[in-house]
Length: 149
Length: 221
Image (cartoon, rainbow over all chains, first blue to last red; front, side):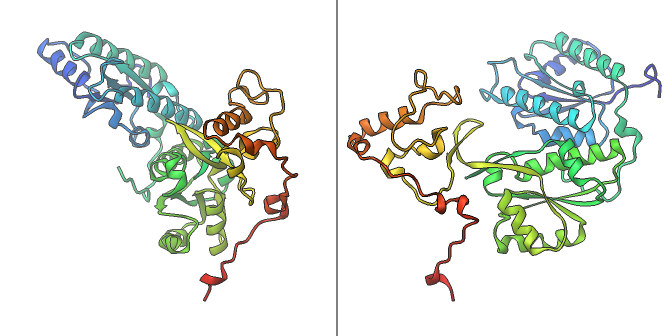
């Protein structure tokens, strides 16, 4: 697959208190972002575990965007700071496995920042197009693997 | 508790080279608490191994399981079927867990973690060593601060004199154990304990005398 025709599958985990509302606001403002983003609403980015990210990559996601509240503005005080550490930890695992660490990124967005959210999504998609498709897509999944998530 | 750290994925791949059916076996006790070998870490590492296997064409078939405790027969039995249907066990227990599994099943059992020390959670995500299991506890003499574990030179009769401010000269990021011992004994009114000279320690009770066994005859049938 050439990188020009490649449309990356981006999973965006959005905190319901900030970036999910920002995505909603983007709709109200008629701001468009590409349809190959799959938004997953989460109660807080602190709920996200490294295993969720690893399973998403295992199942063929090209990239993951974790969108949490601005630092100091988390509804649960420090959920976004926990997520930041877990994204960093996931990057370490990806590098060790042979995948690019840039395939996962954390951003901090407030509920009012619809435009910056769209910009971040477009920027992440551009990064993924530059890196190319996840090599795991080309390789068939083993049939006997039991996925718990 | 026993504190351990994960091995890197390239290290695990080296260990597992040539193997096909792999059971990644977690332990729900100490290594879960120190975030090294519990159910979550097993899931992360199993995913990482599957990804690496597909990228490097290693044909691993990875199964995940976490039991309550790997160093206890009652719990090990719960892993029997999973162990039997796999070629190799990659244990995410401590060194005791790995050996307990290896003694009971005639198949390769590999360590997925590096077992580090007996310690406590000192602050969030920071574990520190508190005990070397020397077999003859002297904590009562030193205000509950172990000079064998926490003094880099294992000094039993006072500080070495090399500390700077209150920091150890061997590991500058750690406090001088003897500074802590002095302050502690002073605050609990037991400074007199430091007046007696302690005899050289008999290390036969520790690992230096060979691996240790404890038998409680009163509990044997």
